Amino acid sequence: MADVTQSFAATFVDELAVQGVEFACVSPGSRSAPIAMALQRHPRIKVLVHIDERCGSFFAVGLGKASGKPAVVLSTSGTAAAEFHAAVVEASYSRTPLIVLTADRPPELQGVGANQAIDQHHLYGSAPRWFFDPGVPVEVPNAARLWRRLAARAVAEAASGPVHLNLPFREPLVGPPGEIPSAEGAPAQSATRGRILPSQAQVASLASALQRAQRPLVVAGELRDGERLAPALHRLGLPVLAEPTSQLRRAETGPVVESYEALLRAGWSLQHGPDLVLRLGATPTSRVLNRWLAAAAAPTFLVDPDHAWRDQDQVATNVLACEPQPLLEALPPVDRSAWREQWISAGKRAAAAIAATLVSTPLHEGHVVKALANRMPDPGSLFIGSSMPIRAADSFWPPARPAQRFFANRGASGIDGLVSSGLGVATARNPAPTVLLLGDLSLYHDMNGLWALTRHGIRATLIVCDNNGGGVFNFLPQAEHHDVFEEIFATPLGLDLSQVARLYGLVYSPVVDRSGLEPAIADAIAAPTPTMVVVRMKREDSVTGHRLCWEAAASALKS
Image (cartoon, rainbow, N blue to C red):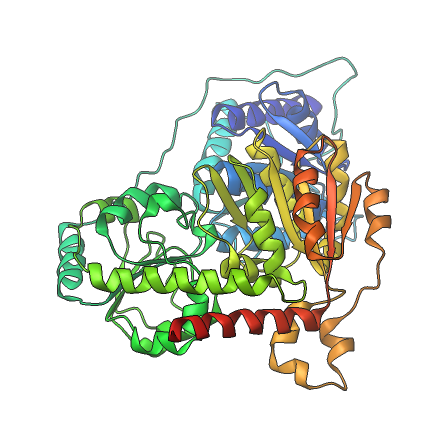
């Protein structure tokens, strides 16, 4: 039995490599030994060991986001497999390639109280694009072809989200010492997925609507390869409201509106509502933007090649199930120069007013974003944490430089696994430097992920906005309930983050005022050793600072 098990593992893993898999995140365990050993021995697959399965799975998500290829994540049976669930959900909702391999007990050890045996069939519910359990490896005619086809299909199915293969193994799980099994058979068939091209009717419908519209807007949420759309949008010539993770907040896109959230918070936006909206990518992060679009109730064309119906306010009047790039390239330019210049000019006035206000406001996330934007390398990658960091980046990040890329876990928008996902991005994007911008709660939630930094020699810088708790809640109505707010919403940690840095071998760089912020970030990015820049701020100062910025922008727009 050991021979067929080892042959299956070696052949299956070899086909993963043939199909383009480059990384595998492996957590230690006995039942997963056949696959783990085959992965470690394969010359074309880099194995990254993670003691914590949750860290490993989110690390694999980061690899997939940054590379566009599925990474493998492997666990032994039992609750170890359950630790992957949150990452599988994020991969599903963010359309991130991921191959989940869970080792399992054989059928005779299921439902009989055997150790470490749980029901792993469809363990992740509806999140995987494909689930399959091939059963215990057995010798059958053309076995190698079957095993290779299983791996090839897993890679193909994972192109737009996670797949889950549950692999039961009988003992013995390893062969004799010194005996290394070889892969069998020829490579399996290649399965590729082409783009969904727009129909002539789709192009004609959107082109006609744009020509009739007098106040059309483009709104861009998170996009994996959004920079490819920049030339077409530049030629189209419409004002673009693009969040950083769209990869379109850059000069190459053309009429990108700076500080658009400030415009929407001001009375200026009441007189500048759109009469047509073209939406690209995921639902925007900004609540202010979503509410404004819902109130405008303009005809909305949602480009959605994955049929995901990402329209939370149900305002889309036309859903175009096609790839955005060929659609945009087929559209004629729209001459709405006066309308475009109103948005561009207003955005510049708002951005200037905010920049002037930051000089005197208490230290808050806006200062961190501006300082990081000034020092962010090009090329370089920024992984942005959920809650306050992603909102601050949306509010304060200026147009990016050409080779900068932005990543976040916005599929399910959780704060779990953010350290690991960011380090996965850093590994896939090496040698370009990577920065992780996180809150203190997000850091705490995935502190185990820091272990991978020194273990795998990852080049990354962490910038932590430490407001001793969940600062995003201070902006919500819950903050007015003073009798319960601090304990059940703000949840102050009271941690000394210098000890966290020391535990995981990072250089600790504290910042307590605006003057020290930019030098600390510059030094950390240039340092040969991973550095944690911790920016201490008060949650109430964040609320005050944001309010003053919005008020300054509103005043500038009235003048």
